[in-house]
Length: 142
Image (cartoon, rainbow, N blue to C red):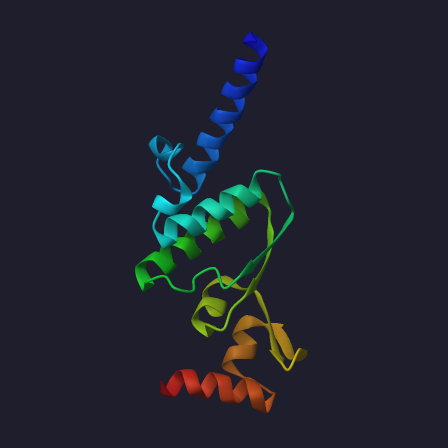
Protein backbone atom coordinates (compact mmCIF):
# COMPACT_ATOMS: atom_id res chain seq x y z
CA UNK A 1 0.00 0.00 0.00
CA UNK A 2 2.91 2.38 0.71
CA UNK A 3 4.00 2.10 -2.94
CA UNK A 4 0.52 3.18 -4.03
CA UNK A 5 0.73 6.31 -1.88
CA UNK A 6 4.22 7.12 -3.22
CA UNK A 7 2.87 6.75 -6.76
CA UNK A 8 -0.08 9.01 -5.88
CA UNK A 9 2.35 11.53 -4.37
CA UNK A 10 4.45 11.61 -7.56
CA UNK A 11 1.36 12.08 -9.73
CA UNK A 12 0.08 14.86 -7.47
CA UNK A 13 3.46 16.61 -7.48
CA UNK A 14 3.53 16.43 -11.28
CA UNK A 15 0.02 17.86 -11.45
CA UNK A 16 1.00 20.72 -9.13
CA UNK A 17 4.00 21.42 -11.37
CA UNK A 18 1.79 21.66 -14.46
CA UNK A 19 -0.68 23.89 -12.64
CA UNK A 20 2.18 26.21 -11.71
CA UNK A 21 3.36 26.29 -15.35
CA UNK A 22 -0.06 27.48 -16.48
CA UNK A 23 -0.36 29.98 -13.61
CA UNK A 24 -3.01 28.20 -11.55
CA UNK A 25 -2.37 28.14 -7.78
CA UNK A 26 -1.51 24.66 -6.52
CA UNK A 27 -4.05 25.17 -3.72
CA UNK A 28 -6.77 24.75 -6.38
CA UNK A 29 -5.64 21.22 -7.33
CA UNK A 30 -8.71 19.58 -5.81
CA UNK A 31 -11.23 22.14 -7.12
CA UNK A 32 -13.73 21.03 -9.74
CA UNK A 33 -13.11 22.54 -13.19
CA UNK A 34 -16.59 24.12 -13.09
CA UNK A 35 -15.37 26.44 -10.30
CA UNK A 36 -12.66 27.98 -12.51
CA UNK A 37 -13.04 31.16 -14.60
CA UNK A 38 -13.02 30.93 -18.40
CA UNK A 39 -9.34 31.87 -18.65
CA UNK A 40 -8.38 29.42 -15.93
CA UNK A 41 -10.34 26.67 -17.70
CA UNK A 42 -8.39 27.34 -20.90
CA UNK A 43 -5.10 27.15 -18.98
CA UNK A 44 -6.25 23.99 -17.19
CA UNK A 45 -7.08 22.38 -20.55
CA UNK A 46 -3.65 23.33 -21.90
CA UNK A 47 -1.98 21.71 -18.88
CA UNK A 48 -4.08 18.56 -19.33
CA UNK A 49 -2.96 18.30 -22.95
CA UNK A 50 0.71 18.94 -22.25
CA UNK A 51 1.04 16.28 -19.52
CA UNK A 52 1.67 13.65 -22.19
CA UNK A 53 4.54 15.58 -23.80
CA UNK A 54 3.14 16.16 -27.29
CA UNK A 55 5.28 17.87 -29.92
CA UNK A 56 2.24 19.29 -31.73
CA UNK A 57 -0.86 20.82 -30.15
CA UNK A 58 -4.05 21.92 -31.91
CA UNK A 59 -6.04 24.79 -30.38
CA UNK A 60 -9.44 25.77 -31.68
CA UNK A 61 -10.32 29.38 -30.79
CA UNK A 62 -8.33 29.34 -27.51
CA UNK A 63 -9.17 32.98 -26.72
CA UNK A 64 -12.87 33.06 -27.65
CA UNK A 65 -15.13 34.28 -24.90
CA UNK A 66 -12.26 35.79 -22.90
CA UNK A 67 -11.87 39.48 -22.16
CA UNK A 68 -8.88 41.28 -23.68
CA UNK A 69 -6.64 41.19 -20.59
CA UNK A 70 -7.26 37.47 -20.07
CA UNK A 71 -6.63 36.87 -23.80
CA UNK A 72 -3.28 38.66 -23.54
CA UNK A 73 -2.18 36.58 -20.55
CA UNK A 74 -3.24 33.36 -22.28
CA UNK A 75 -1.37 34.28 -25.47
CA UNK A 76 1.75 35.13 -23.43
CA UNK A 77 1.45 31.74 -21.73
CA UNK A 78 1.11 29.93 -25.05
CA UNK A 79 4.17 31.75 -26.44
CA UNK A 80 6.25 30.88 -23.39
CA UNK A 81 5.20 27.21 -23.47
CA UNK A 82 6.06 27.02 -27.17
CA UNK A 83 9.51 28.44 -26.45
CA UNK A 84 10.19 26.46 -23.27
CA UNK A 85 8.87 23.10 -24.46
CA UNK A 86 9.76 23.33 -28.15
CA UNK A 87 6.11 22.86 -29.12
CA UNK A 88 4.50 23.40 -32.46
CA UNK A 89 0.99 24.80 -32.19
CA UNK A 90 -1.74 25.01 -34.80
CA UNK A 91 -4.29 27.65 -33.80
CA UNK A 92 -7.65 28.00 -35.48
CA UNK A 93 -8.97 31.53 -35.01
CA UNK A 94 -11.19 34.10 -36.62
CA UNK A 95 -9.40 36.84 -34.69
CA UNK A 96 -6.70 38.31 -36.93
CA UNK A 97 -5.18 40.19 -33.98
CA UNK A 98 -4.62 36.84 -32.25
CA UNK A 99 -3.12 35.43 -35.45
CA UNK A 100 -0.75 38.39 -35.70
CA UNK A 101 0.34 38.15 -32.06
CA UNK A 102 0.98 34.44 -31.89
CA UNK A 103 1.57 32.99 -35.34
CA UNK A 104 4.71 32.80 -37.44
CA UNK A 105 2.79 31.50 -40.43
CA UNK A 106 -0.85 31.99 -41.38
CA UNK A 107 -3.20 30.06 -43.63
CA UNK A 108 -6.40 31.77 -44.75
CA UNK A 109 -9.20 29.39 -45.58
CA UNK A 110 -12.50 29.89 -47.36
CA UNK A 111 -15.06 27.13 -47.88
CA UNK A 112 -12.60 24.54 -46.57
CA UNK A 113 -9.78 25.42 -48.96
CA UNK A 114 -6.55 27.33 -48.33
CA UNK A 115 -6.64 30.48 -50.42
CA UNK A 116 -3.52 32.18 -49.06
CA UNK A 117 -0.59 31.23 -46.87
CA UNK A 118 2.73 32.61 -45.80
CA UNK A 119 4.49 34.51 -43.05
CA UNK A 120 1.83 36.12 -40.89
CA UNK A 121 3.08 39.69 -41.33
CA UNK A 122 3.18 39.30 -45.11
CA UNK A 123 -0.29 37.75 -45.32
CA UNK A 124 -1.87 40.39 -43.07
CA UNK A 125 0.11 43.43 -44.28
CA UNK A 126 0.03 42.65 -47.99
CA UNK A 127 -2.80 40.20 -48.67
CA UNK A 128 -2.92 38.86 -52.22
CA UNK A 129 -6.22 36.98 -52.29
CA UNK A 130 -9.39 39.08 -52.56
CA UNK A 131 -10.97 37.25 -49.62
CA UNK A 132 -7.94 37.93 -47.40
CA UNK A 133 -8.02 41.58 -48.47
CA UNK A 134 -11.68 41.71 -47.44
CA UNK A 135 -10.93 40.14 -44.04
CA UNK A 136 -8.06 42.51 -43.33
CA UNK A 137 -9.97 45.60 -44.50
CA UNK A 138 -13.02 44.68 -42.40
CA UNK A 139 -10.80 44.59 -39.29
CA UNK A 140 -9.25 47.97 -40.14
CA UNK A 141 -12.67 49.55 -40.66
CA UNK A 142 -14.22 47.97 -37.56
